[in-house]
Image 1: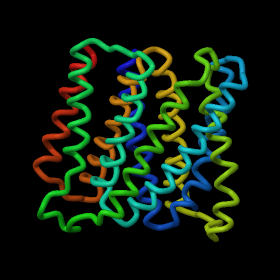
Image 2: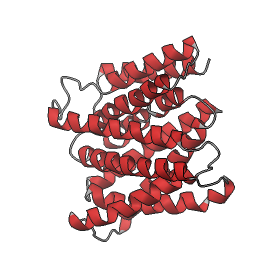
Image 3: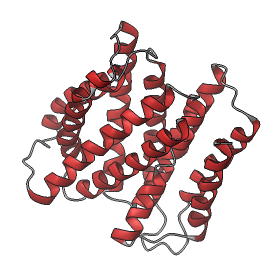
Image 4: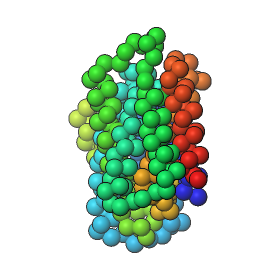
Length: 277
C-alpha cells in the first residue's frame, strides 16, 4: 500500500511538473501557478468528504506552512524549467526533496529495515546520477546560479513534504487542502505585482488545468502514503518523480540524456525493489 501510493504520487508529480514546465515556456511560471493552484484546491476540497477528519490548530499550522514552501518551490522550478532542460532541473530538485525528509525522519526516530536503508541510499544516488549533465548536452553545462536555485527548490519541496506529514494523522485531507488554499491565496498578489495576471486560452489553458489536476492528485497520494509508512521511505520513492518528467521530455520533446542519467533511472528501479522488501 505505502509503496504503491508513493509510486503513484511520484508518477503524478512528474506528469504535473512536465505539463507545468511546458506551460511555463509559453507563459510566466507565476501565471501557470495562478491558474493551476486554484484548480487543485477545488479538486482537493471536492474529495474532502471522502476522507473525513477534524481540523485542529496543529493541522492548520502545518498545512499553511506546507502551502508557503510548496508555492516557493513550484514557482522557482517552473521558472527554471522554462529556461533550462527539464531532465536536469527536475532531478536536481529531487536530491534535496528526498534528502531533507530522510534526515528529518532519522531525527524523529524512524528506523526502516536494513534493506530499505540500502534502497534509500541507492535512491539518493539514482537522483544524483539522473541530475548529471552529459558533456555533449546540446544546451551545454547549466549555470551554477540555475543549479543553486534548483537546490533551493529541493529544500522547499523537502520542507513541504515534512510539514504535510507532521499534521495530525487523523486529519483526513485537511493538510493538503489548507496548503493549497494558502498557496492559491498568496500567489494572487504576487502575480498582480509581477504583472502575470493574463488570460489563458486554448492548449495552454488545457495544459495549465492538467498541471493543477495532476499536482492535486499527487499531493493527496503523498499524504495518504505518509499515513501508512515512514516519511523517510515515502519521501525517497515520491522524490523519484523526475523519472516521469525525464521520460516525457525524452519522448515528447526529444531532450538529450547521458549514460549516467540512464544508469540513474536503472538504480531507481533497484531502489524501489529494496525499499519494498
